[in-house]
Image (cartoon, rainbow, N blue to C red):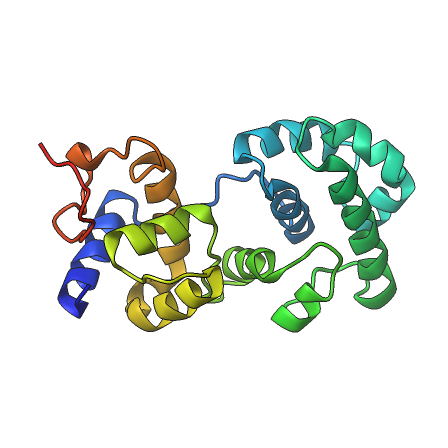
Length: 211
């Protein structure tokens, strides 16, 4: 995809939703960190249902430690992989208390040192909480980037690096959300809605259906 098409693509997405927000519900950096940790291979809707009951009871590292791993499991048992996620969440809470005064750190290196926090989770926190121009490549962004020709790549990291180079600086702050939402609701894995896609003219997908 050439620079002109990329510029038009993001200009179009910006016009539809100028300041998109994450669909995960949170009030504090710690709440977002835990929500993103819980969202791996799970839906935001499912995570929000669980945290709606969890956060009024425990929404700080100290409160998580007081709740304990078994106590946490009772609140997140509806979420996939909840056993390992509960373990990581408690370990993360413990490390935040021990090494970061209970605060969510602001650097990638420190975030990725937390149990269960990988590059994608760190990117989300850096972007949403701290306003960093990062790109967290999930399945939606990976699909949209490859399908449209925006940033084709064989791995999430490859796609991430290409996106960071391709996306104009003025769109970087919200690009992550625009691409996720586009993949979630329009450029879906099955039966993509090409006929109503606002960026179908910029898309180079050979199989797109526009009627």
